[in-house]
Length: 126
Image 1 (cartoon, rainbow, N blue to C red):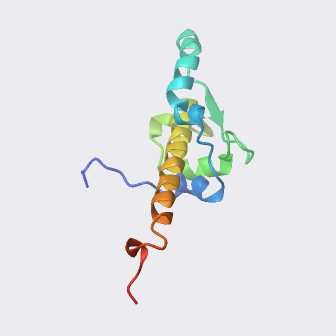
Image 2: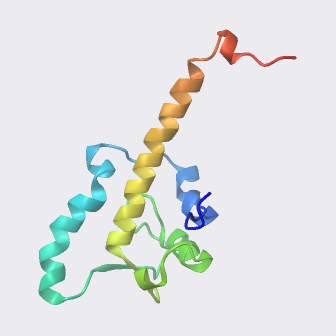
Image 3: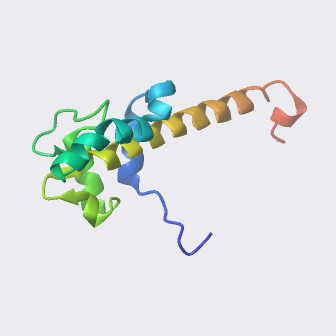
């Protein structure tokens, strides 16, 4: 493992374990799509919009403010991507795209290993 490789913290993985994540074409390209969409407003006012973590309602597809707060508390988000009870919206969109990508990879893993059932490669010696 490279010295620059960081492990994925449990707080990042928690939302994946509770529900299926959207992995349509939009979700798989969400970061770039929304970054471009917000670029004009970000340049106009000089500030990037953020999501506030003031309650436990969902602030995105399936992430709650409580889950985002756990991510902040665990140090799984760069310090410049959050301030107080606010998280940078582009960081959040990138995380959502990561969840979509992981969902697709998990499904591919399941399909590969499901295909082993009933084959010599799918047996375990007893």
